[in-house]
Length: 356
Image 1: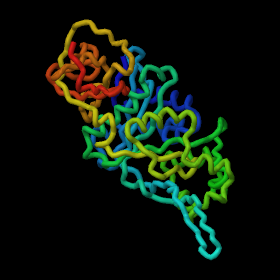
Image 2: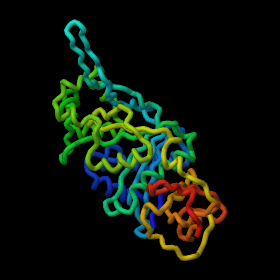
Image 3: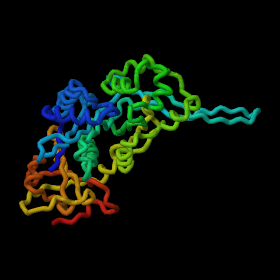
């Protein structure tokens, strides 16, 4: 059985193993044991409300209870840009025209901005290769939307995700080679790493403040602006299905797109329902497709838990949980939980699911 819970101290070794396997490109979770320890400490402080709400970093672990280890992680940064400036490029159009000469030229242009300041970011999605099937990635990503919905007062109404941009197998970025490398005396991987660990002052000190005309960049660099890395395409597709859309901003290093949505418009939030728990000892086949499973959240802030059960467990007023699932969620009969689809199964929402 798999369950979502807050990241804990004992997950450090598993997290380090996943970060090492991920290689370059996962900016917020580099394979740095000391940094990962700080992330765990900050997350624990956030769940225990030992830090200001706007400074919260909430990291969720996907635990395989049979293996007794963490096999995935995802996160929410309550606000960005409050302690370190958060930079993006905005892709816009500059128009130059001469009526006398009959010339009208539109030039795509990159403007350095801080538009996402004070906005909530979903981040740090990482899943072990051994658990990439069966809807586990969906569970790891979408559980965050249930947490955002139940505890909106801690977050902004708008949520965004900065997607990984195009780079090759050696970690080289066409946009960085054409632009960033002209102003930073360091490799793309080093600049991306420093930005990911919060050391961003060098960006303000070295990055040009003037607009960048994309027509002056080589074609390989122009082509990757707003595009995602091939390994990130499934994550982008999932977010688009949830209602996230490209907002015109891109990462300043690799040109990856920024997508955003308002919490109340996110599909998981819109399709979620509340039910009372009914713990039942009747045998239940838990091996059903992702389209026939729902996520069940215990709605706890400090001890947030999410697991999945077959859709047929839902009735008009209750959700029937096997004892093992109820124990994993730390809930008892009569308690109120939240349900949301794990994966789109078509036009029929979970509201219409029948009881067993």
